Length: 173
Image 1 (cartoon, rainbow, N blue to C red):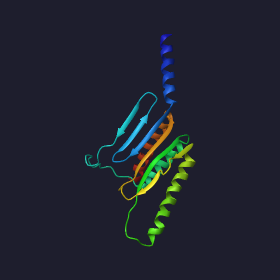
Image 2 (spheres, rainbow, N blue to C red):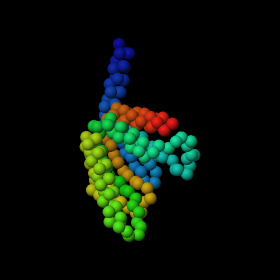
Image 3 (cartoon, rainbow, N blue to C red):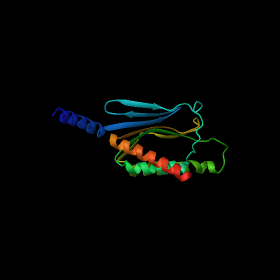
Image 4 (cartoon, rainbow, N blue to C red):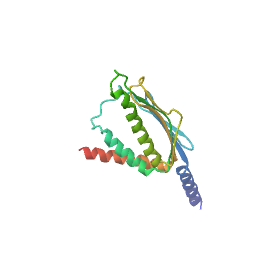
């Protein structure tokens, strides 16, 4: 009888933790930080410096492959809420030419297309005021994005992302 009771308590706790909402924050400034805020604890992962990392002998995936993998992952987690606090995109300041007048509108069109795609793939998308900025002061993109979803959806999304990366690597061979 005690074994059944312990089994019920453990299964209830497992079910409780898996169905709670978690927050995942992805912050890229000088380093990439990923924060998982779970019901009972929080995990903070910080990437190492690029200078300290050894060169991997693995083949690097193209941007198109990453877009394909991320789009496949977004198809699996349609019930998440996404908050975009800040995205800072680098822009080049160069000499004035004819394209200098048209280039910002092309970038804005691309940004709005990505936002519209995210709006269709998520349950709720929130943008803070002045969330997307083009700045000549930064050399690479910086962002602060928070996703709110259930833990089992997060696990499913991470497994889908990993499987997609592995399939893309096999496709390259």
